[in-house]
Image (cartoon, rainbow, N blue to C red; front, side, top):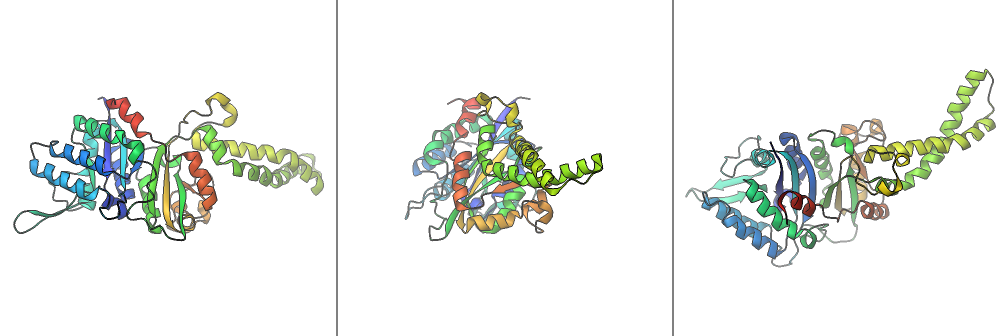
Length: 388
């Protein structure tokens, strides 16, 4: 069966209620598809109207629901009429065999009773009818395509606005702009994408306890050049840290092998020479974990190429964002992390510890620049499958 590119639009209400993680977790784990791109949008009135107009003619067999969806998008996706501040919408792209149908089945049908928890709309959607049989409240949670043709049409439209309306949407209607507001970066690491699972979604769900808002996200494969730059502050720390470790280990080995006591000053000399080598080896392992390649094994000309591992970058914004996220992540060593924290739940060791978070507002700025969350990858995927 041929590969397809499917999409899911996470609605503003679903995002504002911190249900993003639940939606992502279900889509990945229940479809088995690969999440290949993610982008935050603050849809302009122009995009909203064009999308709403297209919905009116998208389902001629069920004109009532076509009208309902069109009206919903005009009301829920458009910028606030009073402040003109945008609302946040997340566009996710999934690739795989029979992707359109798999995403649609995981989402649930608009006419379903939405009772129970089998589909996304069962859990997060609502469709309430009054005594007269008319729908009095409608919240579909997410919007998806019923066919390949419809997916192509919608994605071409949203790709057209990916630069203008997409990226980091930190001035949206539900984000305060007062003193103490910070932005911070979270990287959901490659160990969460080894196979389709709920882990990425569950991590986002755990972080939602912070009360912060997701204002940007990007699915990407980190390059070796990015990893070297991103972890450059760690490099010198490791080279220094391993001096003491090398001195002790080498001293013990020599003492046992030569059956003599090695003086502490001699151990220190050994550590000065061997420690930086051990630290550099550990740095190479970190880069390999994040990209799939050791820097020493990659030509300089190839370091800017996408690695073989997957990451999801998210920008959170809100009061004391750095401190709140780092608390919910837990210490670098999962064994020392508090119960219920991300690293205690999903981490294995100091390197394979599920996620990274910026340790200061200044580092957040530096790291966000390296990862380039603002960069669009939606258009290249849409053009690959559906043309311009």
